[in-house]
Length: 413
Image (cartoon, rainbow, N blue to C red; front, side, top):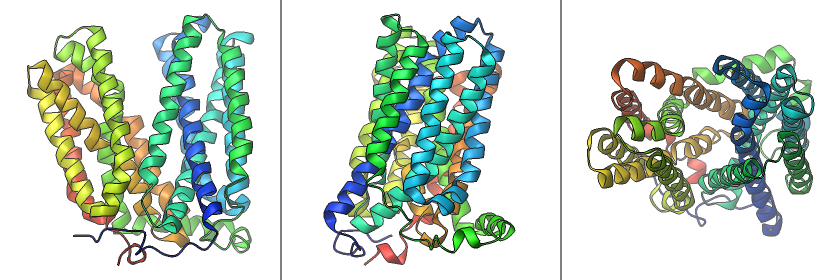
């Protein structure tokens, strides 16, 4: 059983505490800005579809463009981080997020052209994909210096950002605000908040000699980036993230519909049950950090996997609405910590943190991208509730792989 991590046993911070807390808080804000940007796009997607008179297939192609941009951003992130450092790297990527969001707005209503929206989505996806790695690497570094687990709370800030983005999107839609003006306002908010927040992020990575990194030949850097895939522990961490990201992504896309079609409930009930899931996810991330500090990563992940398994079984099998809601709560709580804890574990090897975080993030993103369509295809053949058994199997595998997330010697007594 892994030793719990406590402030007394963690490494001593190498910078003043006020500076360290400002760094941590800046990462909180950056996580929230990422969530805000993504939820803004998702919330206005119906309006964009209607404005451009798009078919479902065309919308799918636009989303594919964003996915391609995200993957390219993930691949490029470690090189941008090594060359620019975290402060300038985040300044650049948040700028790309704001610019991409603005272009989406331009193509959606100011100059209605799906090609402009596609270019905006590729830029938006690239910025968010690269930012995802940078903010997780910096979050893990701040976590190590703080001596207590804060990564789940950082991901909770992302959830808060998505809630804010969804709420503002609903208000804008109800008020009849054009997508362009909504996107413009949010792009300015993100850009201004980014400029303020990144000032408190270190100019250089705390764990990498950036003076040497850009001088290394690109082939050597590529080989080093690919070498992380030979690390068996990292692959198992990827399995954890695969299972838990699959659990989260399938709920985001299919839970409400499974409530309506599988359990024969109303559309309103489906929306409310999805709200229960998102709330449980957020609560799990808020309380997860102290629990990990008290009991260690492995026991918390094992209990989380057990909760997700029990919750999913209840959700799939029970005909009783109250038990279905209880299952949803357990599902959300259980799936909440796999992604942030996997990021923390991947960053334990500080000298290769960017490459390792990029690798496991790619696994997690693949689950988010591939999982929902797979559930949909299976659901057409065997029903949505039965299709969710695939998620159940992956959560079991994530639970079995959880010992790979054990704290490194740096974080143990």
